[in-house]
Length: 195
Image 1 (cartoon, rainbow, N blue to C red):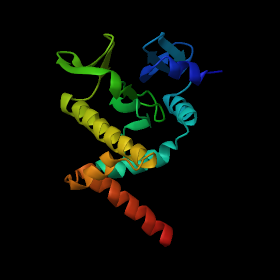
Image 2: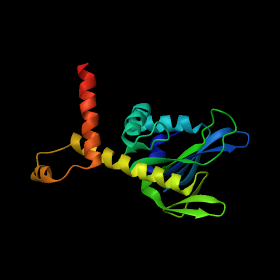
Image 3: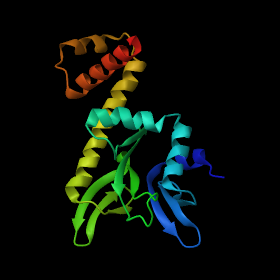
Image 4: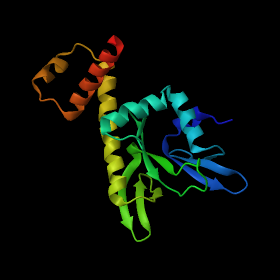
């Protein structure tokens, strides 16, 4: 049985699909505290387990943030403010249902490097993850992750907002695209409830 709590408390850096001899389609979770953990389940199953642990609906999250960033698939996953995972293509699948995308924690990304043999995401702690995507594509996914993080943080702040004077002082600030996207989503949610 997979102890998700132990893995999460060891600070997840990346969740990557791989094939292991005699085990098949598996998942490698790289953690900051305890190194690599191998789980003999598909990446899809592991992501569902992480979603249960963080109590989020992955399909609703994917739909919501996909609309915000204007994408229908390959969406960053915000488990919480400190665990925003960026999708990165890391392998060519052998069969149709095998995942080709791994997920990298935005918090631990140090740099992206384009080398002769491919694009590498350099992580804090000197771990590297090779991507099968172009440099600009990886960069776009990271930028999408930053947008998702900002919106996630703003949504969280709205839920726990207090009546402090600093909140009211922001009324004289111009609205950002993220503010407008949040407002749009809230209005659509109200409209859907009224229908």
